[in-house]
Length: 123
Image (tube, rainbow, N blue to C red; front, side):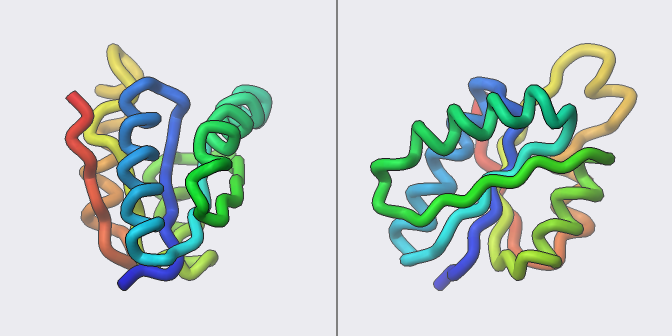
């Protein structure tokens, strides 16, 4: 079904839940996983290290990548560049003023993604 699953995370509890679902889908499909963090590279390294550790025993090949830029744009760009056939993202992540300034990342991704998008209900 799927061969390359991109899982977007911001390190939040809700994103971690979405990542669990994404890894389960990848495992069921025999797919590889790329866990993507968009934002500060310093915090991204920590977030990705924790995510990689959490899924290391899943039996799924997991790679990680941290990039800077607009979250929705970068998720779509990396998905296209890496040949992802599924993007997994949580329906909630950022809260407060940042969310209203940036808009809904899952909404933007769902409209501009080069592949299928699974928006995981996390709340």
